[in-house]
Image 1: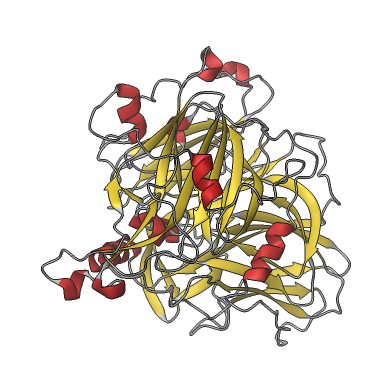
Image 2 (image 1 turned 45 degrees about the vertical axis):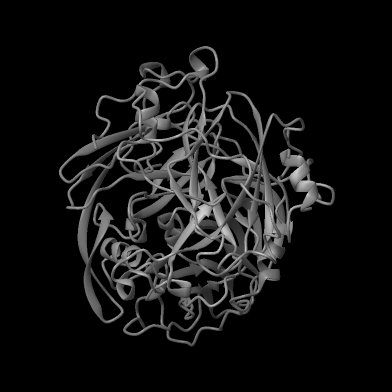
Length: 572
């Protein structure tokens, strides 16, 4: 039965030097600068939540250093690993045009940078500007290894909105008292769920709601009547989050580093991996106002951190020690609040959405319970029904290879991956309301390193369908190497006869929250050759296997061909 038949059935700058492009062996037109950064992966001691621990950082900064650039700039970052842990850096949202070798996900485009080794990342911000971020892409090191990337428009090109009085970076995160590398190992060995974070953080500060944190608070000082641009980044591991400022409206003007039509709201929701620029005008009586970050948990029966992180939005002239006015966040399971934000996102101008589709994939996204095979089930089978938790796309749990897929693909190394990722699930049923929940009945995820090969220039549509196996949940799915048009989304099972698509001004994103118990449709042109990871940005789901790989073949000519690997590419 065909895919369509099936569907119808189931209806200035830091550490920077500048050179002209003409001096670089680079294919893109002249006009940008080259910006150099030196990243040292280092441990440092921090004192938070009545506890002192060592964390992994870049340059002993938490959050890490900000990468500043302009559109079309060349970025060169030497990363030296001075820790005992493996490390990589992913430049989240950067499309890595013809620079797949420098994308950063471990065992996908590179082997990790081992202790004592270094690797230099080189890429160009081709026609990209806005708020991005970088983060570790190995184990759970992203918990503390992250920082902002701010890419300004070209000189004398204004923002398409009121120029703000000031700009501030606001990074949402999660903090664990445990060693996160060891924590991941223990969670996977247990077969059970991950524990909640010990605190939420705003620019690494938990705020006064947590123990020993009365003075561990981030603050923005504001002038009455002025408008501020906040560059919001969710760098958290396992939670999606609401964000609001007491008594102030937020006007969204950019999402995932692409301008949007201005949309004003009381609060926003960001999944891990998502960025958003909002304008805030200091138009309230002089005082100290809370900026609050709290949980959005759409899954059922999952424990999570429910104490909000608080920062201050403080007017000049306010009494310094005054009590801050509280911000009102939606309840943790307010799906409508999350949907309202997504409904408001539209590209600033009409866009060129692919109309004729060459390749369509229908991909189920969700959790699994696998049968327990351990001889010590009390230790290793702590999932539902005494099984082990897994996660999958089209019921295949992704397994990392031992050599990076890009290297294996480029050098034709056999045995590392297969090219048979299915374009649809092997079995169709009522994904939202009729999914089996009792292991081992029909929930057995197949383990494998599966990839899907796309021809260069093909117009691609992906339908992501959430399933209720274990629980329905909002899944932030990130695609490396591309941004994509979010042409549609809805609740229930995807039905091509009733699905409502926006082909005029859909938002252009790199991380899409597949709605809880629903579906999302994205479109893009496969015009960037390489090996690109597609995965849930909830780290526990990625660890359980919620991912797959798209391989985009070379086209014709130099500008459509993946270059050879760099000489210092890390070895496995």
